[in-house]
Image (cartoon, rainbow, N blue to C red):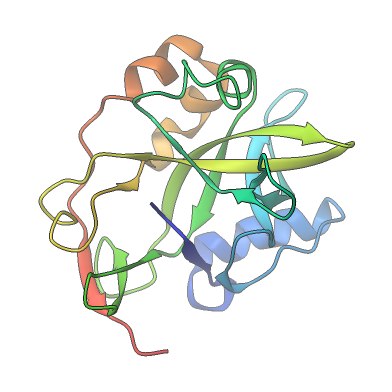
Length: 189
């Protein structure tokens, strides 16, 4: 599961460019630590190219006030809540890392290294009452994650973003891809 991530435009030039594109498109993505239900920057399909917008993180759940923030890549095509969105409306979360908590309640920040590098997470979205909501995809953890948590985000390389968004065959095949090795740093906050 991925329950929090960061979007730090002041600490990362690539994220700053994504943030500026969102602002130029009339959006105000939340920055810093991103929580479920926050309006976060999302890369999705546009008319002729990808575009940066904001969306609420999480689909409304089955109970009042419930928020579903993640979808399992292994079962996404079988789950009625996600299947149609995955097949038709894929998106990408640009982040500067994500957080997980170990069994002993220690918060860990994950990224490629100790700096807030750009880390792209696969997602999909759907409109609820005219407002777009998104979920990110998770997969089985690799060796860099397994000691902390039993799930990890489905991570894309920058060169895979357009394929994820526009190429259904690529997206289906990518669901089973091995994830990159990440570094974990205990985070006191």
